[in-house]
Structure formats: C-alpha cells, structure tokens
Length: 454
Image 1 (cartoon, rainbow, N blue to C red):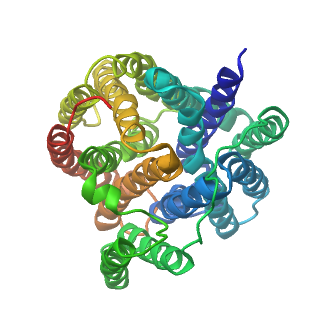
Image 2 (cartoon, rainbow, N blue to C red; image 1 turned 120 degrees about the vertical axis):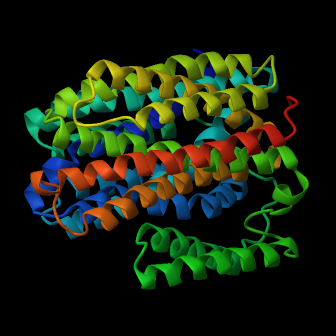
C-alpha cells in the first residue's frame, strides 16, 4: 500500500468512528433515558452536547492545524476523544455523561478539522474527488454499522459497550498515525494566532448554538440573538485583520466556496435529525427493539455509502454543483414521503423513504465536499476542512434544535410514554415540513454557485 493510500485508510477509520458513535448513541437513547430516569428534552442533550462542541471548535483548530501541523492536531484530538470516550463509558450520572460527550466533541472537532485536509494534501487534484468520495463513504459505513451493530451491542451488553468500541478504534488511530505518518503539512512561516478573534468566535458560536437548541425559552432566545450579533461583529473585524483565524474574504470573494458551504449547512440542518426522530418513532410508536430498529435504519446509510463513492468519482469528471443539486432534490422527495407516516405505516413504505433519502444524501455530500476543497489554495486547506466540519456540525445542531424545539412544545419535560404518543406523532409532519422548506433553499444555494469544476 502506498503512503497516500495508507493515509487515506487511517482517515477513513476516523470518518467511520464519528458517525458510528453518533448514530449508535441515538439508538441507545431510550435505554439511557430509562437508566437515568430523564425526560425527552434532557435525553436529547446526550446527542446535542457532542454536536455543540463539534460545531464551535473546528475553525480555530483548523487554523492551528494549517500553522503547526495537521497531523499533530489530528493525533492530539484522537487522544482527547479516547479519554472522553472512556469517561462516557464510566459515567454514573446524566450530568457526567453529557459533560463527557462535550469533551468528546472537542477531540472530535480536532479530528474533523484536519481529516479532509490531510486527505486533500496527500492526493493530487485529479484524484481528489475519488479520495474524498472514499472518505465520505467511510462516514456512511459508520452510519450503516451503527444501527445494526449499535442496536445489537445496546440490546446485548448495554449502552456503555458502544463507547468501549469507539475507545479501541480511537486509540488505534492515534498510535498508528503517530507511527506511520512521518510527513506533516503546515505553513512554512506560521502567522501570529488571532486569540481575540478566536475567543469572540467561540463565545458567539457557543451562544448561538446553545441558545438555538434551547428555544423557545426567553433566555435562550436572547443567547441565540446575541450569538448572531457576535458572529456578525466577528466577520466585520476579521475582514480587516492581518492574521485572521478565519479568512472571511473566502466567503465574500470566493463564490464557489461560500455557496457550497451554505448548501452543506442547509443539507445537514435538513437531514441529521431524521434518524433521531425515526429511532424514537420505531421504538416508541412501533414497539421495536433497538436491534430491530437498527436493521431498518441501516438502509439509509448503506445507500449513502454506495452512492457517495460513485458521486465522488463522477465529480472528478463532471460538475460537482449539478450532481450535488440533484442529490438535494432527491432528499426533498424522500422528506415529502415521510409526511405521511403514522402508527400504521408499513415497514416497506419506510424502507422506500430511506432508500430515497440515502441516495440523495450520497449524491450530495462527496461532490459538494470536493467543490469546497478544490476552491481554495493549498495553504488554506486546513481552514477549508474546518469549514466543512463547521457547516456539518452546525447544521446537525440546528437540525436537532428544530426537532427538540418541537418535542419541547408538544411534550415538554415529560418522558415519551403511551399517554403522549399522539402528541409525539404530531411533531413528525411539522418537523419534516420544515426540513422540506430548508431543502428548497439548499437547492437554490447549490444551483446559484459557480458549478464549474476546479
């Protein structure tokens, strides 16, 4: 195996770990809820605490990676992830679990912000789409394994077993990367690090994401609004900064980069909470076990994996923008079919919906990521990779925020039980309708960018 292919293999393991952990924990949420006696809103924070930190920290870590070494930041992140994962497995209270999940996300952010940049650095431009396609395919393999393997482990050994699997993989990646990858990619002359801009960015993103996730509480409305104002102020000062943590000129002067990132943000805001909502639907409304729920939900990521590899190769030859836009349209169709879910919906109908959604997402993700990474110079690959991670994780957080907001409105702090199953079912069509509206905006963003391959 050549060095670049070995590097790709290690990054693919990382790309497998993160979605496996997230999706398998979603399957385990009812069991975690029962053990700690928590309501639906608190239960959602087992997922959202991880997403919060992975949304806030990739940009500063991406900048550090460009300056001081992408592989170095990646290895440190792997070790932090491993330590926090062990803490998750040993948690004795819901507070400890949520805190450990946040730290887990911090390590994940260091890995997210460097993974794609390392792959892009290792491969020549004519092979970029293929390599990124394989890396994205590993994401979907993680998503594919999570429902089945995660459901089996949760049902057989309990939810803590999920974290021991991730712990072993994270340690393997950290040790192997240190021993095998002798090359690192960084700027020859590191610039001063923008500490003030970084602090403002972190505080503003934290306020926005945390506040949005807690709507409609008035305190969280204020936090979300303050976060938006802080982000606007951050952009204004970064435009005139000599050494910005985020070169916002890329967003204003690089149309392909800006609109591809916007399309990614909207896509993840549209799709991420689908699995969360369907997992609750299948286990509470349909009465399925975690393992049986996993067998059904695995259909979507399997189609994602198959399609992502193909679309990545196609994006080396044809317009990434056109392929990605087609994917968003297919996602919109799948969401439309989910509007008709009820307690009597057959498994065959849900399977068709998941096949369509998986195909659409696979068509979108690889070409869109390839377009982003191909739109910047080599010196900015770390920050471009960080933006990919930021759009993904912020979009996922927004998606979960929308779902949690509706659960809060219809169910409140109560546990999901037969007494409120009808109110839970009312949240589904509203959630999917909002996602359809977002998909239409995403299609516009994807078609508006310059679709020419770079």
